[in-house]
Length: 363
Image (cartoon, rainbow, N blue to C red; front, top):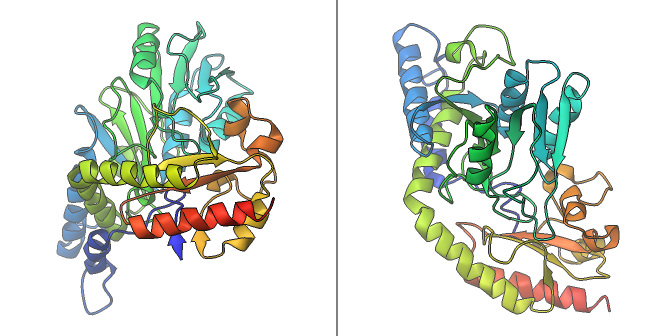
């Protein structure tokens, strides 16, 4: 199997797996202890959690705190519901945000004003776009999960802060790969998009920003996110973050090289989204008239996506591709190829050639 779906999830780094194993101990060890317990094994587990927190924080801006969550979806919910307390205030989000943001917007629409910020045909937000006067929180992605475009977050944050409002950045696809944009007040990330384990993510919150908890219970993590943390998941997340910092330059060079190979092999396909303002490891490509379901059936040895994995099975065209002006037919004739740390030149070339041959066979 050739794996080309790095936007949906990434393989677990061997180093992250090794860091997790001691904290999955059985009855003959003490790695299973509750990190919120006061005894010696509990304190050891708590220390492992805090090491991981520091490792994640090292990839964040200074002057904030890391709150571990079950993933980026929970982090986004915590940020939005934790700040949109004032009824009648405005929450704004771009039209190409992840479903976690858009569904939260729908959920608060009964008590708050919700404003949609469009993107152009390149999949980019105008940094000088109109902003609502009653704006309380703007959600804007760093790197889009479907088409890989990079948004002008820093300029938007500058304008939002001038209004006394806050910025939430879904940095899931760009964190650890690209420098984070300046000006963010909250940043949501996920371990499994960065070669860490599934089931854990984090919300970074700038110091001084009040936040209401989403989950109530034992008061863990300063009362902002109750629940017993998994030292194993935290340890894996922390090591994955450390590796990302160490491998960022090599990972980007590898993604750029492999993307060039794919574009050369699929030269007659159209790239959806910006050619330049993008993460190179995300290629959303279109061949008009293509039957993507048939293509995927014919290529069982290649794992790729027909769109965002988070919306798979919905039967609806991608809201991101529709937002950049594609017709339903064009959106449904698009595929997403994700390239990452463990992709190799030989496997990527063979996969691209197989995709080209299978698509040509449909004509």
